Length: 276
Ligand SMILES: Nc1ncnc2c1ncn2[C@@H]1O[C@H](COP(=O)(O)OP(=O)(O)OP(=O)(O)O)[C@@H](O)[C@H]1O
Ligand SMILES: [Mg+2]
Image 1 (cartoon, rainbow, N blue to C red):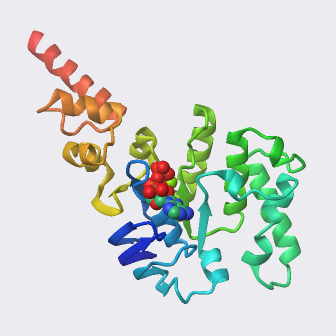
Image 2 (spheres, rainbow, N blue to C red):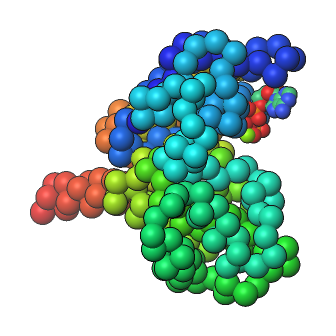
Image 3 (cartoon, helix red, strand yellow):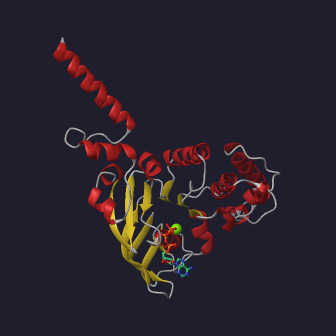
């Protein structure tokens, strides 16, 4: 789906990405983690072809981003910027969602009808009023408009640069619920996030960048308990894996609140049996 082969990149100010090799497979939900300035946004911009590597190769569905047509890359990869205001440029929510669909849909005979259909679908999905001006909306609402305009194009790979930063709990759950459903329906997700609770709850695999180098690539449950790796990248595990780590032997299988409840019930059952 998306391959980085020995990829390095610099903005002319020293090396930002250094020899990263990794493949994102179709249908995966991958979280990209790392401290501020580690190179996460840069790697994602290389992944959608916005930036070209200084050396090495990035392939989107097998095609080198140095030669792929921008329209083909835009059709396969949906990209949500770290700051929604970087991608919002229209006067109304409706225009924002329609904008870009021309490009994505190409010259199909029923393009006008399909654009309207997809716009209506997105307005309903996000419960948005199409006549509102994105400019006057809250940060969380603008983030939803930006995501709606990306999803309207129905990309097979979705790259999300901190989709929940600055959102309240309800807005965060709305956005993550929609992303989780897309993933269940087969969309491949690469998501940058500093919110380790969100990462632990939604992602399947984690990648860790540190100073432009890939220093970790593991199933997410394993990564949340890999203290050495998390410490190296200045990452704090979410509360439940941290608690399980602190409790030590006997708590290895505890990754989520549900695991903790199940173990508590087991322990209660065992002590009840002993006292009977
Ligand atoms: N357009 C640019 N020109 C020059 N240097 C840049 C540019 N964008 C980013 N950098 C530098 O590249 C490095 C990596 O930046 P990047 O934005 O990829 O990090 P990040 O991991 O996304 O950080 P954050 O968590 O703060 O978003 C940083 O040192 C940053 O200052
Ligand atoms: Mg960033």
